[in-house]
Image (cartoon, rainbow over all chains, first blue to last red; front, top):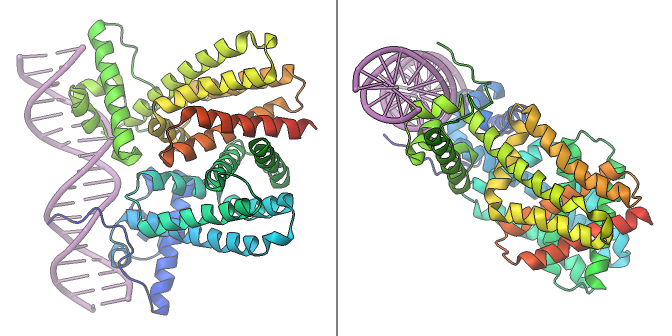
Length: 203
Length: 203
DNA sequence: GTCTATATTTTGATAGAC
DNA sequence: GTCTATCAAAATATAGAC
């Protein structure tokens, strides 16, 4: 019997205590595999084994390995969005420079926690049949930034937000791949790029 | 018999006319597979079929699918480096702004030719057992930019070059993923980020 | 709910004929 | 040099016992 390879969404929400532990273990095991060996190395058997559950159990929660990836990405996005909202909440009281710095701090904190995992999930998204809900989260993260920019009368806030997210991400990737570990110096440099960009686009 | 999965380098240089055509066809077919379906979809059987050659022939030139990826990346890098050198050659006669613009034009031209392929190969590099020679090419590309910056008395030219490559790449990725196709507007915005960054890092 | 065992499919790689 | 045929290994997914 041919199985549905396109299934992406977690099979069901685990409500029992035990089930949640299994799902968490699968996520964490998968994350480690991705970090250690990349996308190509992730498979359901290995993920189950490393999570300390059987493949059968894994398939009870995830219809495919893509579903695991989608779930991981979704989680990460939710966490970042929550943090972004927190930072953007009272932004009107602050200078542009301070807001930018706080937003970058939030983004960096998430990214630097697990840079390789972040990179891998970001790439996976590009070829993964896109999960509507997760795409929405991405848009909302951009939206939070655009809102801050629009309030400062920056033209084309949506485009600018996309540019800023892109440049920050690119610099974080380059830095982490080069093995650079000085986070505060990195923030300073990203801030230079972001504020320099905004200056020049405004002037 | 267990085969050597770690082999990366193309098996041999094709010297005959016919062989070169086969190798080219394999590269092009692989590139299309990567663009259409991502890294996970690339396999030797499919690449051979789409290239119009048999798997046996493919294995005559490539010891593994990783070798195909490594070869594709190596080619792309060589092309970009050649272009960068051309641009950087007479840079002393030009303003910083003009040099930056020319370098970005070169990078963009290469990237926008096949953005999805570029992204995929870049990601592949991260988990691919790194090909010494290709890593060297990457360093040389950064080196060309660093040289230009150092000549303008920009401190920490190597670090700045890495940042600039990263931010440009991140913005190109974001733009192409969003489906934006206005290349000249994109150049203008990347220039704003790069020059703004340099200004602030200098001042 | 979870596990073991297993079928099915896909992929990697080679042997041997032409 | 190239192809066909095929093997071996790995990965997906499920059935059925507990």
